[in-house]
Length: 511
Image 1 (tube, rainbow, N blue to C red):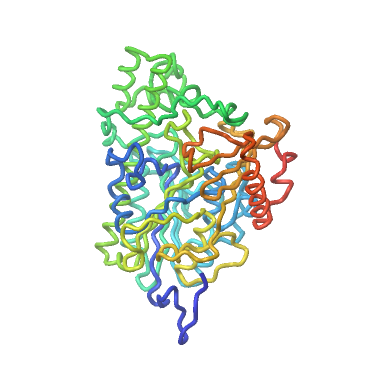
Image 2: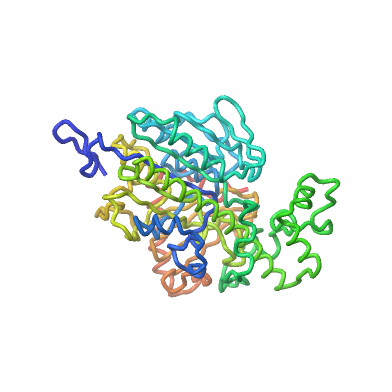
């Protein structure tokens, strides 16, 4: 949206600059929408996220929020730049990120905002555009976390990472901010990233319940191509009993006398009970898959529980400080995650569970409580939204759109009708082939490309209205011809709009 000049004052959707909102952005790593109660689904009755559910009840839940490249560091680069991966240069987790390029927080600084980043950013190098930053190096650790600031490193021995991130954020909020200026506070959690180590006090949570399984836990990928068959992210074959599920049997993970990480799990009392039960009667076959699923899910949910508690602490602090009325609180994740759907964990694919991400916001007096948005939004929109909220200029080369009108219940007539996606990291962890695609809210067309797909190119088409779990690839059906042609035209239109270079999108770029 465009800011208006009225009687010498900038108005943002009717709000004067003097009343510009504080922005609290809470971000997690790999948090799936399926594990947030407000989104419903098979896990809705487990009381997984009471604080997030309250934010949704008091604000807005976005049901069609997506990412442009479902992998950690590229998603964060998009968050900061408002640009797709091919434009900001961060295609995968390996390539360096150019911190010198334009980023929204630099613009906020120039327009009177305090900017703060605390937690995980996963973009190596010195942060720019933040008045204060305290970040985890790389992936960071769940226990005894190390944080980096401009002054150097600080270790928090005996502490749990979610707790430390929360404390550091609240310390800045309560003690260090300039009360005469609005602020942008970014709280970035490591959890629930692999390998899902919970806080000690949460280890018994969900212990005596059965987590509902997805209907396609034992998907055989019968209608899908080489990419689905060739991935390495199956709970069955690729979820590691030792490292991921913390089973301390030398037969599974190595001799603890020779491996420091093995020794850590072997001696950790949090996992001793689990190991004893498993070693006494190791499951096999489908029973092993089911056991892996239950164990993975419970550790994951224990990690997200700590994040939800953190969110509650932050909201409570805003209330106590008298900041809630003029603060917008937003929550999202760097991408979605598989909770056993298709038999998988991890992300990367354009299939719904990893392509889609949670996005929830509350803004007293501006967002209607209990509202739900179903417009197509993407993580290229976040930077523009922050700038718009601040009444700051939005650069023309940012590729997204401000979500402020949507937050206020108004969808612009020219709102997008389709989303572009592109995943690049192949060869790499989990073996997901390079692919690009287009999604219009119902139809999803995916093009896998490179030397490791048949003939260098393979297509899939899904109708999410009739096949919401994407089990039936109908690309080869004769009756799909007209829809395929229409979707390919949309794909080409978006590639032109976003200036996707052919040497990035083409099969010749694949390794």
